Length: 89
Length: 89
Image 1 (cartoon, one colour):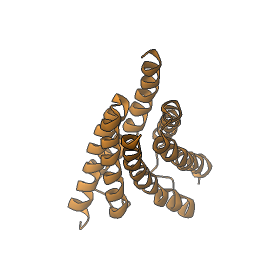
Image 2 (cartoon, helix red, strand yellow):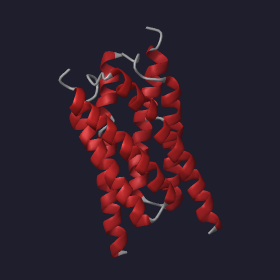
Image 3 (cartoon, rainbow over the protein chains, first blue to last red):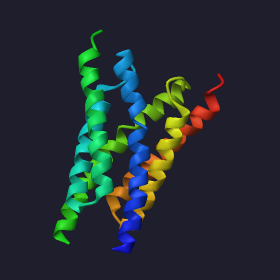
Image 4 (cartoon, each protein chain N blue to C red):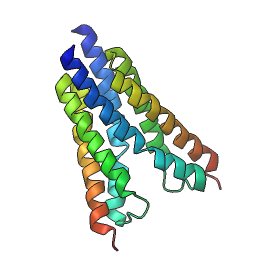
């Protein structure tokens, strides 16, 4: 259990860094409504991928994976939603 | 072991989708040399985060995590490198 804890701490640091890196993009897209540089197929793939990572995290019961992918799932969904909503502007 | 295999297949599907979603961005940045919309602090955080995910994958000995984060690590490094190289254009 001692080993598990230190692995999970590394995972949680990873989780904080990679999830936080997405937030400026979500904020920028929400503010500017400029979705021209976002690709819908890419966003769709990414969103499905993150949902699968979340399932993977639950199956392995790994807090770092569950935490990271829950938040990234919301970010990815928001970008996907903005793209659909603003693409005809 | 049967359970592990099916979990790892879900992880590998996730890995293919989320890593592939980054390749168009890397390609586009390489072609256009336009790094104006990429934020250096964001890229730095993301790169360090992915390196930590890779270490996490090795510690857990999970092929899906190791595969996904090895490739994303290269993508993240390339974006970081392009940002440094082309930011003063």
